[in-house]
Length: 416
Image (tube, rainbow, N blue to C red; front, side, top):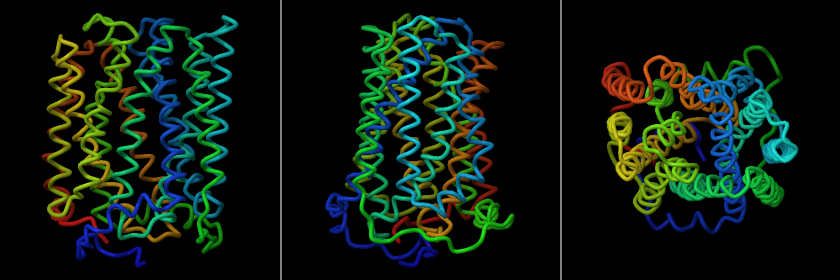
């Protein structure tokens, strides 16, 4: 395939859509992602509740996100080059083993009673380092297991499967934590072991081989490539600033406990709510891919994300909060599918690891650093005002991006 093909080219026949499920390598990759998502979401719920129990601090909740962000920030350039020079399956496998060991360590610390906030922050930092390698490598691996003609469907299908995991994982994590604090971590370790098995079963005909020697220019090539493509830069930077500002969902333990007066089960359902909306939207996109005006639709979806954040922040009803978060998740999924498809279709295979690493850094900055920003701001303003300000900030960013990146708004189609 021509990896530099424009995203505005002619659409393929819709009859190719179901064929993504006939690729064994894709099924193993998707299964690996699902089991990893189940494990990480269950652990995220337990970690958030542990930290808030230990500290009663909004800043500490935000610092969890900062600990995840730091390794992603410092490892980005290394990660991209590693993903482009070595077998991506082995990299993902090693990352999942590391995550499994961290889950066992936290379960042991809880069982023996020597858990502290410092231990949790260290564990989260290690998990962040593993994710820093795993996410861009797994993303770069996807185009190696499916043809370009069904890449959007592959992304949407994988997203729908992961969102199902994001629904089950948080709810299960909250319920398991209520039964026994060690349970979410032990179950997560088992799920990560299953994910490792699936990665080991992936068979692909093409392998990424080194195309150039390691130089300073090659290490920074991912950043250079993104800067030279206004569509890609606009897409990933929009996600960065929109989610960075609209990160009130990082304060869910505060909303669940202090505003909505719910326990761990309530936090679990709040965490699952965005995934419910995302799952519905991802299934729709897998069956009916976006055919026209995808750039403009992505920007509108980001605006809806901001409005939903404001509504969630002002809610005092857990039912309405869940509904707002479901809308937020559906809007975010449109942005994810458009951005991921654009990045993969417009990037040559030998560059995908480095470009995916840059993309992952932007995503990590928006998610983890956004959590830190929300926690810090909430320490001064409280969670409600923090969420409202963040949602308004997201709307302002979308309005600015319409003017700064008109090329993105003009993108018509995603299909290569």
